[in-house]
Image (tube, rainbow, N blue to C red):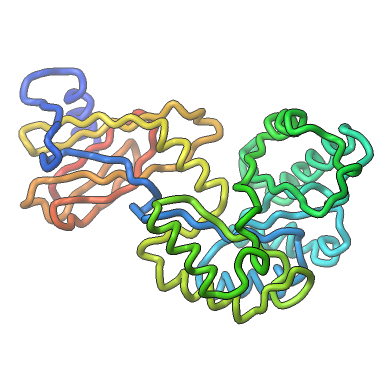
Length: 330
């Protein structure tokens, strides 16, 4: 059955006959790419700098307890990283948390070559800690703060070249996003989340220590934020920096084609111009179906699922690979 419906979908895009391309906003087959995964209102990232010991002792357990995630900007050449090496190189990656580049030691260097080595050595350590993930791949980069200018002898243009060479994606600027700097209470942090929801944006908060270490966020402030995020799960995609970046890049370069065969089969073709080697995330599509389709099958290649329609609309994930997506009434 999957093979037959896929063939029908391919024909919809190559033949005339009864196949029609939809235009009206309320017509069956009308499809949009959701702004964020799951058709959530915003993407929000919890970021943690400096591979703090409190990340291991407090942050990871609190995130895990609530089935949340975060992006950890590590310094593999630091003593506090070494004190929790097993956690950083085995337990935290195995649990699915994102490791990100914060330079090897957070100490800068005397020459441009030293800075480049700081960046590449951190990338090498992340690669070694995640041997089961593809390489090369995109890795998030967070500029280390507090380094004296003489210990950072590299221009923005030179650093950009180093980041590009290592497939590093610079995170949003730290200014206005630092815990205990821009935000000191859970309510202030959640107001930042609500602003992202209203603006349908990607946003983040950057933490250092939680309950210990430095630039310390009190544990109760942190957990208050987490509980507020849990209460907003229906609106907020809580994710890592690279998945959010990949989704936005693919989405902004995506094209959707739709054809309908006498309202019995809806064919969708989703493509993107983003490089598939590094941009390989599924996108969320929202498709209008006939009013009497209460449950639909959605097939793309070997992927097959069942989706319930709500108010004549289905929401589902698909790869922007150009492989036909077949929607049919179940």
